[in-house]
Image (cartoon, rainbow, N blue to C red; front, top):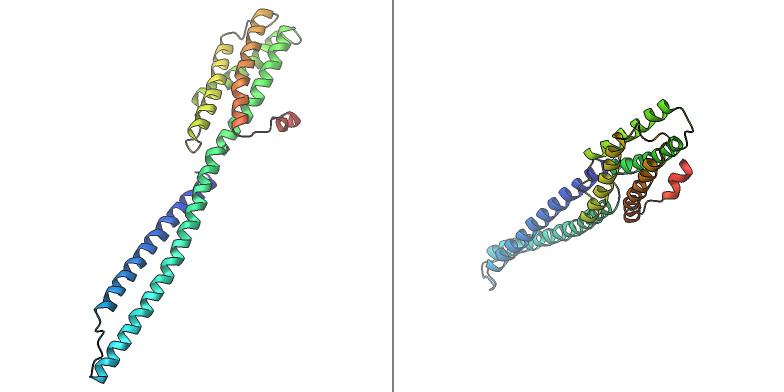
Length: 222
């Protein structure tokens, strides 16, 4: 569980505690008000008894005031923590988790490296065995995206966008793993995969757009 998840869970717990506390003091207010109403309202001739009732009434009134104050404070706390938790939930749903962010970054570079390697293989720009090894490694890494699923803390649309991207990367990797020996000097195979890469990148761009990922930052790092 990430720090953000812990903060969210803690916020929800505090919201519930504050809400239950405010409910408790609300019950105390109602109960105290009922006790006040039960006290005699007519003037009592017995001075000692009259003073006793007056003191009891004042004590109950003071208790009701305290309960009202605590109830209001806890209601404010409930609204603050509830609002903060709600915002955090929205923030989580619209932003990549750490795991998804790592997967997206890795996927970005895998696609570009794969594109570069098959282009070099097409032009026979390096040793054939070396190229096959590099392509096999990249294909395996992309195929591993079959085990990835978007975090459930994301919105439904966000999960769908990421899972489509992960699945496209996985499919590309699986297809490439069956063709590792056919890229070298083979224009037709390479051109087909270059087209497939473009298709995967459309899913990538959709994920970037949804989560406001700055692609230029990747290009600068690379």
